Amino acid sequence: MPWDITDIPANELRYRPRPIIQSYSAYTPSLQELNRKHFLGKQAPSYLVMNAQSIDERNPPDLDYPFLEAIASKYQIIGTVSKGSLILKHNNSNKASARAPKWRETRLQLIGDEEQGFNPMRERWSQLPTQLSEGSRFSLELKPSLWRRLQTIAFKASPLMMAVKFDDGQICTYRVFETTSRKIPLYPFVENNKSLNNALAALQGSPIDKPDLGRKPMAIRLVGSMSAQGLQSGELIIGQPRF
Image 1 (cartoon, rainbow, N blue to C red):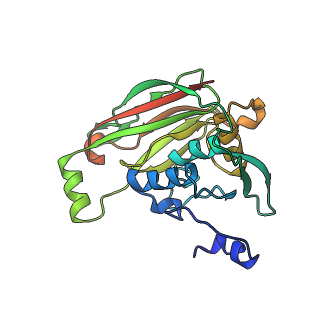
Image 2 (spheres, rainbow, N blue to C red; image 1 turned 90 degrees about the horizontal axis):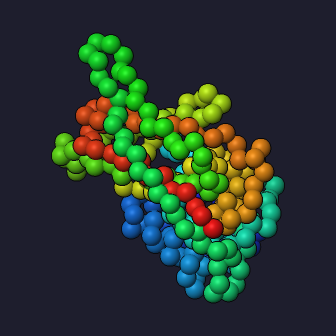
Image 3 (cartoon, rainbow, N blue to C red; image 1 turned 120 degrees about the horizontal axis):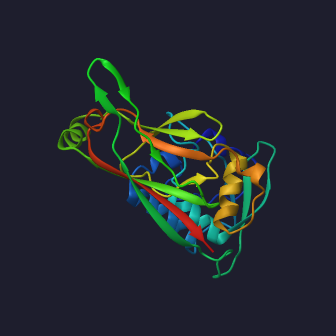
């Protein structure tokens, strides 16, 4: 049992875990779908404890993101506990807690950095829309080369890295995965429990004060050339909600 959920049996609480208990273990779309359906089905727990954490430089927090929209549709945040984790309550009805948004998509090409012989690589950024709606998300569609597919079969392939440039001038680099980088919150960008709270509220169409939105992503790039990353092509899909 993961150490950070031992408070549940220690306090004699009834525990009904999702199929894939730890988010970083949901590393395929089918495993992510198991978790998503769990929170939409009859076995969904009445209460939910969520905590934003990261591991191995992955995009923080390390959540299987598609299930966040299921949670936003069925749960309401009712408070936090002493360690900062969010407490959510199921609405106990067949109706959604909030009206589901309609999504407007923008597709941007990811071309990777440009190799320049012995000189440093030229960074090539994909600029995000200047007007990002609250609750915006992004997905990566990455097509691996034959060499990378063979690497994955034979042994562990080198990690793919993505850099995000924010409006405060900072650039952060995260590890991403070809198969599961879908529906990741973009604005607010989830970095801790407070921004996770705001991301869920935005998915429910709740207004958020601008100071609470946190820093805004401005551009995204794949770190390294496409050939060095073992990719044939890549697309960045920006989804903006309309309620």
